[in-house]
Image (cartoon, rainbow, N blue to C red; front, side, top):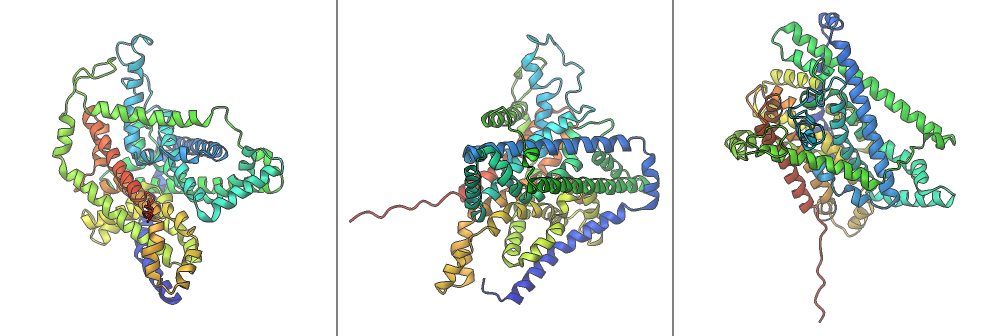
Length: 549
């Protein structure tokens, strides 16, 4: 761009103020609401608190470890066998599936009256009626762990792929991998000792986002998580819904406790990573190596893909089902009644669409401007502030959003709801766009400047067209994140706005299988269309050869 250095810094400061102020205000409002002394005195006396905290630690840490291990194993196999393109082929559909929709689909698949047991009954199990088994909402949180792992593995794979496709590291890492093999290392061992430590360091923020989400998730835990007691995030949300001020304050205090739990787990994880890098640096790589699994990568991908396919099929069948008695595999009658009811709720669909479109567009525009204008040291120093919505518990974050909305007179308004969604979407868009944007080859700009062309012309004619795939993908991620928002819509909207997600999660608590499936299916369909549009916009340009004379 043509602006001078001071002008660029001034514009970057203005951009920062437009986002950092509401983010910090929200965080301070949340902390202020959750630090009332009386609430902290009564909080340890709650009988369900410690069990809820233990469940939170178990489900959050276990799911993060499993997702990290699965993603690392798949990346190693895909890189070594040069099948990364095949590995990433099915990711857009998995990324487009919202957390709540996946949880609802797993609920209909794994529940005692679900499709899995129907397929085995009565010829194998002998069941003529659903057994009283805790296959979902089990007291051990296994269903929640499965749902979290299935959703976070594609996210980690995708964020790793954005790093592996960077122009400034792809060729260098390939050369280092080849050099390690000339020193006698096998391809797999060379990946773990040379490439994986560098890639894992670049995945620090995505991994912390996964850990924070797994520890603080509410919508998935409401659908498929344990209920008596629930996780700490659900328990805090239940207290926050109480009209009694003391109970509300206790819920805010539980949110602060959850934030401290996330902070402690994140610090422990970062410490373990540093210790692992120290071990590798001192020549003890064999101890730090992740063992190869005997299952081929195609089987792991097939297993993950089959799970998503089963979930989608269960939701599709459920949305058209009428009478569906156990143990019939297919409904006895089919009906369009659920989709008719969805079509009649046009306000809900419209609210979801305009919120997702505007919030993702604003977040993308801000992220591009920030990455273009902000000095590198500013960007690195301020990333923790910009990622606050990722690392703070959602139940605590919405308390701050609600407080900010009250003070700014935005509570229950469309403007306040859009601001809440944009603040939640922006970290994901920035996280998705940064690797490609920061890894853009600077020689293009130097060559363009040597031709006497201005900075804006370079952006419009060279840089942004070359980055259109990354720009479109980041916008699609933001759209999907906005569609999936449950607590901000419910809380900041003050009950005046309903979205596809709020309807789906609310219906999941009842017994309307067909209507719940229809809303969950729509929850998936909207992001899928956004990712399809992003794929079309980001397709490679095709040039036709001029006809020979």
